Picture 1: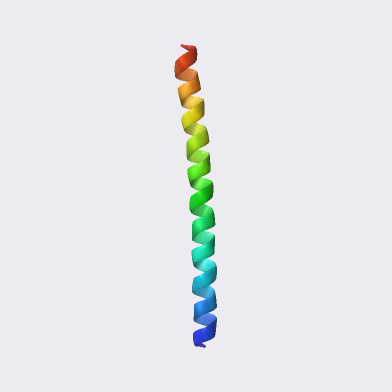
Picture 2 (picture 1 turned 120 degrees about the vertical axis):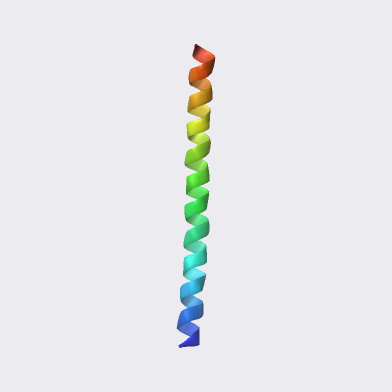
Length: 41
């Protein structure tokens, strides 16, 4: 039982880090687009 719980926690943490990385990546892309629009004006 304990092994399954540890396994689940491990998967959850890896998913969490992966998700956070994607969010940061998208956020940075959005910032670049916004700054580009401001420069064009």
